[in-house]
Length: 339
Ligand code: PHE
Image 1 (spheres, rainbow, N blue to C red):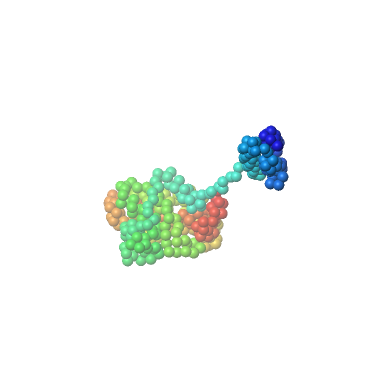
Image 2 (cartoon, rainbow, N blue to C red):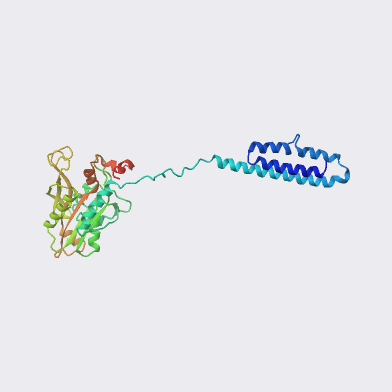
């Protein structure tokens, strides 16, 4: 045994290692052959140290240690490489020819669709779209609209009151009041929005949607109201007849409720229209001069008309949706049908 022998082992180790490449089994065989505890070559070379003449022990020992370090670090490095290679090999293959995963497609909610259709009709007639707060005060929701605190019509609108005296608006009409306070006529607006009443069944939800309309200018007559609403309704519900029935609202005088011929039976009478052939669709009227006075609009100079309708109801009619609560269930399958 000698330094020469160490060099031979060193060379053969490096050659064997290279031959094994990244084959885990071959590498293990190399490890056993050189660094094996029982009969590895390094073990044998270490044992040989004792047999050497004292003068050679130092150099031999030093070279042997070098060789041990080399074998150890090379084996470790090779092992790391094979592990990395096999991890990469087991990764699922990417098929770049597959079509990508499509993101789920959203859809507009039926109420939103109806809102935009109605807005489009009125925008073409020269109206603008306004909005207002859902948390209102008594003045705008009631008082300014000619509904004093003891007025019986307040009972029709079961109101959600909030601590501190504010309330959830029961209709979009308070926006009429806000616009008249703020702007000089001519006014031509529609106001879509959420409204709230303590009411819940097949046809009522505590939150629903209305669209308000208001026109104020010199010389506005009931004829303008009729022509506008007839044009609007015939455009929204193609081919219907429109009729006006006298009615009452505290903030309009005279007032009218407006019906269309039933879009399901064409006016013959069916379940939807309760055999009457007509479906009530909106409330309207000439702005009561007392409302003008409360809001600082010159009632001698100006007249106007207003109307309000339920967007949810229109959506149910147009799309044949049987239960109002379906629309607010958050069930995406409802909206998806309108994509
Ligand atoms: N605000 C009324 C309601 O909620 C509807 C309406 C609006 C009637 C404007 C007349 C004029 O029932």
